[in-house]
Image (tube, rainbow, N blue to C red):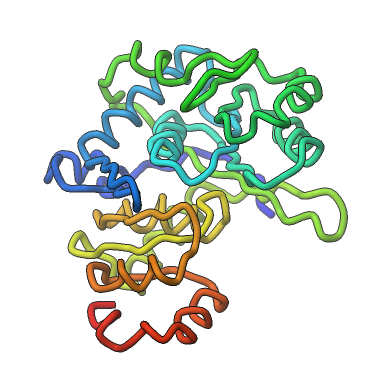
Length: 280
């Protein structure tokens, strides 16, 4: 674990803003099922507004926020807005109990917490157990004691600050040997890891990633937020893994990210064949 919180100067391609300038209308994220799409131009604009919102709340470089969301399209501009604002952010598993969620939100020192009605059943307990949170927001519907995130974001400027420096995530361990622990890496460490993976895997702006992992997970978040969008690739995002949906999506994708169980289920499906993944 490293406690290096020094700022890192971003490279041009570290931000979706580079690709927003190159091709603003190109899809960055496509939500499977609904077909909801967010272009690189829209992603950058939303991330700028969110960064400006955090700054308007008095948050500065190294301050911490936390959010707990299901796989939904607003997750990505929220994460990039935290990056733009120079914040530490903790993406918390949407499958945690009230006690587990409250522990992480409190332990990471979050000044702002963002969630959705997906977690409505536990939020009263979480709110009571996290008194150090200064501002709470809800995405996608009203929640008690939570302000509408969309309204707060819409009221902000979409201008980018030329003096912004990169923020980064601080995710938590699974807690199998006690309470979960926050893993804090340096900004340079995470940026260089992303650049290395983009080079090794050969991600480019012509790629389309089939993403079926939970986005709060270290692999799903790191590859989806940093590597893919940093390289200008598009992401087809699913709420979870489904072998039939994967088989239908693979012909239009060039990269698939998964775990062994995904591939086992694909290989055992009689409809899966070489033609499904000829582009991958």
